[in-house]
Image 1: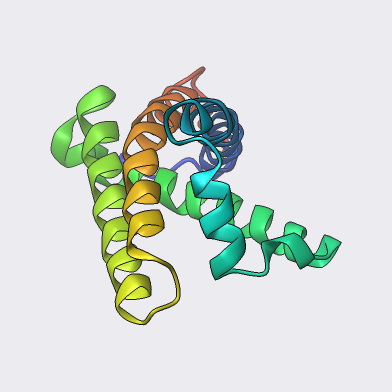
Image 2: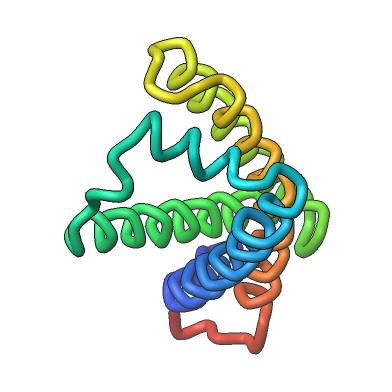
Amino acid sequence: MNEIRVKRMLLAGLAMFVMWAAVEFLVELVLGPLLFGDLIQKRWLEATNISAWTGLNQVVNLFVGLLNCTLLIWLYASIRPMYGVGTKAALITSAFGIALGLSLAINAINLGLIPRQIGLLEVGFVAIEFPIAMLVGASVYEGADDRAG
């Protein structure tokens, strides 16, 4: 039966989140400044109040990221019967996540919430970060057989 293994999904969501955070750090805080200097950081600070965030803002931000990763692992687990187990299904899920991120960024740009340059750069960053994190999450989901969850 193709039931979603809930314990595995939660573990895989956590693994995806941790990998996403690690890759995001490398892409946005190491590679980004090498390519764009401090332009990105300045534009984010101009457009948002991230520098005034409290601990609660940070917790909410982390929780939303973890929730998104877990939901995307659920999507991966749901499409496995159609596309097979592994890389293909993970990359299809990844493409869905990138498309959703692009649509949200376009809407935020259109509403004037974020500058176009920053929104499109973020989508580019996500297009790098997401497939890597998704592949790790899918790998954890497919790990040792845990039919109890």
